[in-house]
Length: 469
Ligand code: NAP
Image (cartoon, rainbow, N blue to C red):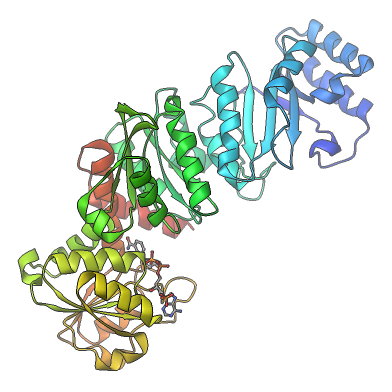
């Protein structure tokens, strides 16, 4: 065998697939030690029995190269006292490798595992299960866990929350992670299909930076978001240095930075939402490293408009623009467009939201149902209409699209929405959401690293990932 082996014959009560009798399972593990397995993994509770202990200890004494992992699992949630449990395992058998694995019901539950890894030394395995525990599997190596667990493919995971070996190695560069690796990530409630980890990690690898970008599933609202930020900032040893922020936390991110005395970039303040946070570990405040908030959505969108239409920012002055939608992305784009002097009319399903946004930025507004009155040279879709899986929907009926218009769809899943297809058919110019995504990610990379990256690399990575899914 080319690689070390861990043999387990898991107790059904702790997640084993079959109800094998205990004496059979102990026989299996003793035989595995006899056959030269580097590690056997036995539930620590089943090591209490003197008979079991004697058999395992005897097998180990005859094969000193084999090591015993004594494990504890909690599929419901955190252990009542994980540190006590860790010590108890070592008291039971000081040469054991303690393995403590529990379900994280929220990403904030992971910090207890991180703390124990940070405070202990030697060989130990400490991980969190479940979707919310995913990051503990990815950064296990950085924090000194002896191993992490990944599956051969999507179907063969042996515990909840495992990702595949391919994802671990390719998307999360697990071979090059070490204790010095600086962490980044995307914070949101739907981050598993986000293209950002693959894109940013490809850029970090290309620039040969010891940095890793994670999907950070922060469920809940402002309280959970604030708790996550506090957890990260009091643990400077985790080396978190920046975040992308997505639905539903863009406003929470800005509030957090304001309330904790951080720095808010002026246009981000005006937009009222932040999609990028940076932590400066060289400047430590009472709440931890200095935090700053930015919004790269507007830069990404403005650069997409300017580059695709081959115009200068000054050409946007007095241009009549219809913005469809009044959510987070609409806010950023309206701020960018009005800053450039464009004449904007905001159309939204909930007309009160359009009115409020229009008032803030000095624009006109109308209901989405009034698109028949549309008189604009540039139309920007900032609603989610047309996004996967509703790919046959469009926010703008085809008959309203004119040849002399430019149509910008911020939706980038699919890359070519029905709106863009119909705009092309009508002979209008088009700007796609992927270009905006690539621009905003490149801008974030600059904020994270102070360096430029290649937008083409981001685009290629996002397309490759989408094709794989
Ligand atoms: P948001 O704050 O939730 O706003 C969603 C907007 O869509 C609201 O104006 C909402 O209208 C409207 N809407 C949703 N479903 C609708 C429907 N069935 N009919 C009519 N209007 C509907 O979301 P967001 O953060 O602004 O994101 C909007 C879209 O932007 C996303 O779907 C995403 O595809 C795209 N986006 C692109 C990028 C990029 O880099 N290209 C980045 C982020 C987001 P109401 O106010 O009436 O609810």
